[in-house]
Length: 211
Image 1 (cartoon, rainbow, N blue to C red):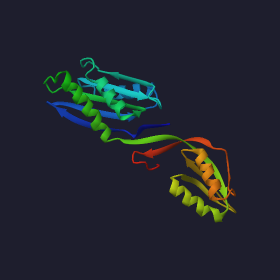
Image 2: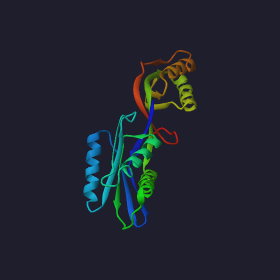
Image 3: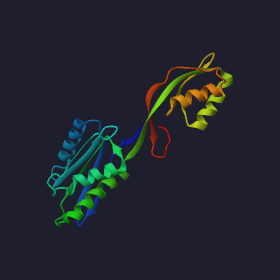
Image 4: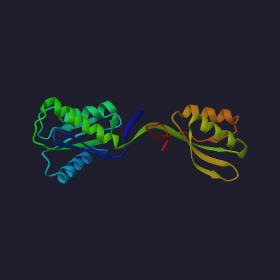
């Protein structure tokens, strides 16, 4: 299982017929956090005509809400939520603040403006991919340690918390526990010892690099 979420939030702004649309985006992990964030942005932009919002919460996007905040129904919150859904991002909340420029944009114009504001804001965020993985504690001798390091580099397993004593002990993280244990057994001819796998979350940049 994997999901895309925010590592760092960001902001973005567009202008449409003299109306300013300011998107502010932040990671959230609960409806309460989302509500607090929305309230904070509304307080910050208290003089704006609208502060429309959308959020998605849960590893599988189980909870989602949106608000048009006075804009015509379906022209702001829903398009904003659709952008997040299409990108597959979860545990995220966005508020788009509108300062009215004096010209009505119409239904289509509002949908495009609010959608574009969210996309611009996302361009200035740092997104990460979280993947369900496993860690095992591995213990081997120094002769086999080089083989284990080469294996991890080749298979993109992650080595953490290495301790050098009379043997080498390390925590190794992979997406598939069975493959990892089989590879360790094979590369060391069964001489390495390892623990039962524990469930962990692997965090990767959007380009696939482990953070």
